[in-house]
Amino acid sequence: MTGDEARDRFLDGLIARDASPHTRRAYATVVGAYLAWLDDRGIDWRRPGRAELRTYLALLGDGIGRSSVGQRLAGLRSFYRFTTRNGWTDGDPWGAIATPRMPRRLPRVLEVEEVERLLAAVDGPVTGHARAGDLTAALALRDRAIIETAYAAGLRISELAAASLGALDLGRGEIRVLGKGRKERIGLLGRPARAALRTYLDEGRPILAALRGPGSEASPEVFLNHRGLPLGVRGLRLRLEGLRARAGLPLGVSPHTLRHSFATHLLDGGADLRVVQELLGHESLATTQIYTHVSPNRLRAAYDSAHPRARQAH
Image 1: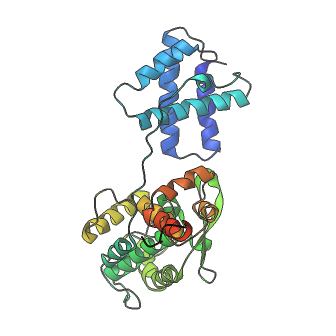
Image 2: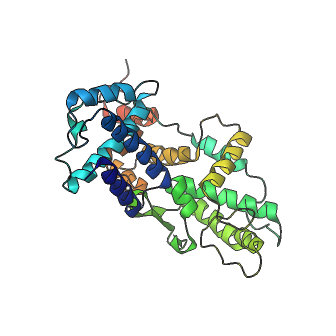
Image 3: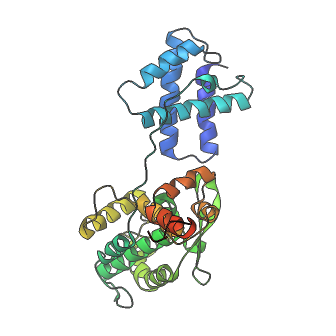
């Protein structure tokens, strides 16, 4: 088994696992460059030495940040896990190499008032006023439903774009989504999100769906664009960026910010960390724990209520 053959099998395996096109392209580049570097030096890709790997690590980190180095190493380690499972290698040679620690970045979180400002930036009716053929009103109902749904259920932007009509149960206040690794979970929808979705589905979406023209196959996705086609990830990003600017929110506020805000506001309200983990669809509790470092108000409230001298008069 040559390195190139192993790489091709690895990339085929990513397709079978339904990895995103972005991940497949990134891993193809990372693993291909690594194997070419080894081949140029006559190093067996199955058993590279520690000295060679340290040299490659130094080259890998030249001119890029630690997070980028970490992403590339993740691709190489994923490659070796695959080859080990298939019996082509004895393990991950990178496991014995100390890699740079990633900086811990706290996610940007919106205050509740900022979420309200984002909703207020939506032009058009809140409910009950979308006339037949009124495209502007239909888009406004859609935008309101997008924000309410993303914030209520803590969805990733890819999950929001892929959400289908069949995945909605507004009576129960639930939306079924496929997260990373195609793992299904249930997102919960509060009353404002359910109301926004009902109005959009009753009054806004039919107007957008009709724009595809007679005879066109209907789209199962919940959110449609101004041509009646599914509103993809790029369209969602552009729309939310426009609303961010109109609301006067700072640069860096992204669709994922609503997901971060969802988690932090739940913890602020006293939700259990494992409940938040389940709602976010995180594999590891450690991933969810970053949100415990975002909320100083929650820390202060816990301290004031628990410490015997926190409220004691001097």
